[in-house]
Length: 480
Image (cartoon, rainbow, N blue to C red):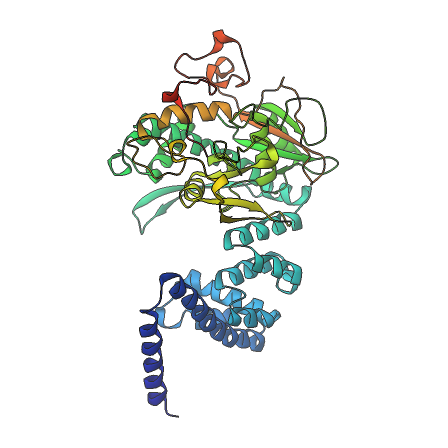
């Protein structure tokens, strides 16, 4: 058949398919588009994989992928990486063709292959990527990479190659500074910047001011926050900036699983206050509070950080996460504040979960999924929002009280100080010691905002902050 005839039939077939989609519900359209996308991507990756096998490398595949200018260099590199993975394991293209594997999930496998050649042929790893969401699959790949680099050698290499550079971004007309180094130090610096950014946002009005009316954007505040910290302006307080996890008999690592060299760990501990959380059955601050308290304790939050590492749905950094009750506290089922009944969730996922009346379920492999909540698992509407609130019924109070609630939440979720008792946990991963490191600022030892939330001394209470057990209905906190 001539090329012109093929092109004509191709266009007619596409018109027929797209026209049929207009008659379907949105979720059906999305499912069929995903399958069609996978089929087309499988056809392309097979052809590019043939080029990789013929040449022995992916350079020609990269040039072909960028031909015509329809792809950026970055996208062309990703397409060539897919082709390299498929050239190693042709079954990946079959999975892509049937829709068992999406293009993004194949990208995750290809990226893992860049540091571990066996990733593309490791069937248990591939099956785990298929079962998980894209975000959870990326986290699994990061964990695999961290394990492959585990040990002192990788951390020492990161320290040896650490650098800072100044350069000019001519395209944007801006000057820039880049920092590169070990995972623990970069994590600590970035969390300090994010904490300072939140302070700047609150000083500019916080949630009381619509985002469009804030004097600066999120990215601008991040720049200002870094500049403030370098100049010594501002002192982030609240949750820890660094959590180091020390498996008994194993190397120090970050929450994400990256190894930390002994000298980096020593530097962090020298300038930090330390809290210890042992996941063995020791007497100390309890992690199972039942119905005695609605808010998660400091020890519980730290235990969740070590277990969940971030938002259990989208893997967002734990600094911006909240302790979510699997069964809402105010629901008819009356959820408990127990560590095995809590999960870390970022604000966006948390709000979406409640607004859609869904609940979390933890699977046997440790991953999380959602399902529709039963009537007993849905808190009454009155506990989700106040009268006249501008937000949906997703556990958020109106903007007039949001900053006050956030301040209390930060204090309530602060991990315990160095002289607190050790806490107990029955984490299935075995005995673990988590050292919380909060960067000290000059004169911050007497900062009243750093007081232990369990302190019952009435003289230490901030009169502007009501006790959560207060029966005054005007001070009810929205349930999660």
